[in-house]
Length: 342
Image 1 (cartoon, helix red, strand yellow):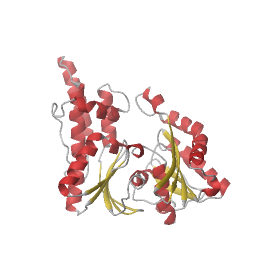
Image 2 (cartoon, one colour):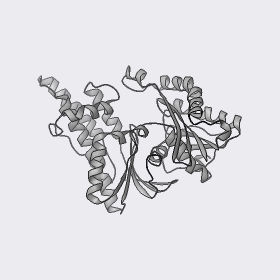
Image 3 (cartoon, helix red, strand yellow):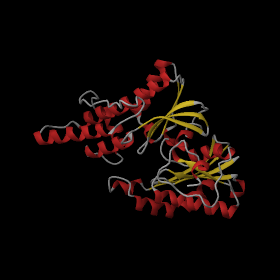
Image 4 (cartoon, one colour):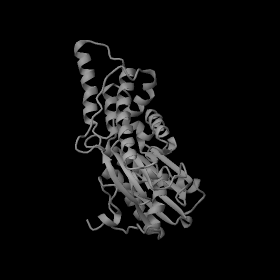
């Protein structure tokens, strides 16, 4: 079964063809990242315009690379939530038109479910497992009970880990995206040079809070500037990254041990972070947990992960009609069937 996946939730316009949820036949991504670097972050209007300009060509190229025509495609999967609403609408409306024109089933896919599915195309991991989903907009610990059954155990109360890294990087004067720049610079620094807190959420031990860390790095920089003290940016970057990763891995380990999970998965854009990958591997080795992390090329937004998850949604009957809409926010444990009456 071949699924055509379409992803346009942020600044990547992507299309892929995936067979049986696991075999990637093509994976094409057009990004507007360089343009957004000029502004220090994603500009939603620019992202939406670039999606509209790129999407036809990206879909055509994905079919060509997969040596397919639409006659070979069994269903069309598209990211419908969450994300930048204007960006999502480009992908959703294109997918709806394509499905109508070719008489193919339309499968709505939650973006975070797609990130989790990036592990299905990178390894042979199967549910149930415990997953840390960590990106620029989300930080969740999720029990993946089956391919389409998700339970949120912990999540951030404020900023996401990726957002904290990006904004800390911008405060340090690093190139956007700040989290990537911090990761590249950190090996040159001393991760114990600066002291950062490890925030705890007292009423929910599995939740995260990163807003205080973001404030702490701003205060360190401002205080040093006011006193005329030198700031060693590689040291600051390494110390900040370590604090964020410690929070993520400590809570992940706590949930896994207390809820008896022995299979751990990490997904989302921040799963590409080298320190997170290193610390997660050490934690899993210590506890004899099995660990799955996507290949680097599938960590960021892509359509192969959407097509993969779309396969599992499709065989469970998650099919939409022409009334499918996009949603800027949507809990990962809500299915399209659940939210459709809204």
